[in-house]
Picture 1 (cartoon, rainbow, N blue to C red):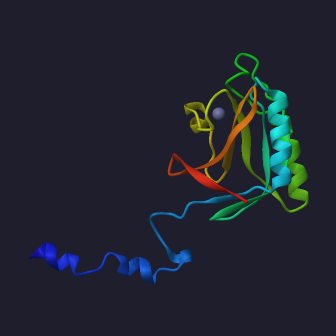
Picture 2: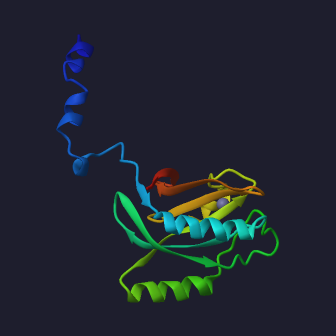
Picture 3: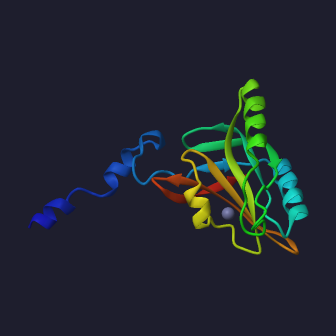
Length: 166
Ligand SMILES: [Zn+2]
């Protein structure tokens, strides 16, 4: 009897009444807006760097549901021991970029890096080094070029994939 009483509340009632801005769990999938021109630039850097990992910064504006990427920079990968599957983003490039973009009202909103001959899925190392609120754009690259481009952001310690648009 109790089960029937509970089921008298249609499960869709809450959802139907909710507006996108007031919806609670599950959180809407975040979007990373990455203009085509920037994708092209990124692909060129990543392919030129193959078979090593290349990395850099995403610059733009980050909102709750979407991050708009307006510019990209490439930074040196300082990892000398395992440059094929690890990256260590040059902290000087980070500091210089951070200063420069703040002057024009933008901010660093994430990091991009490549996975040579590996899927565009965050590694354990990527997880431990990740910052909440940033987007982590990962490109899978091989000898033939870019395989895939996927973006991730932390939601309660776990990487959740973002939709890349357009
Ligand atoms: Zn990685």
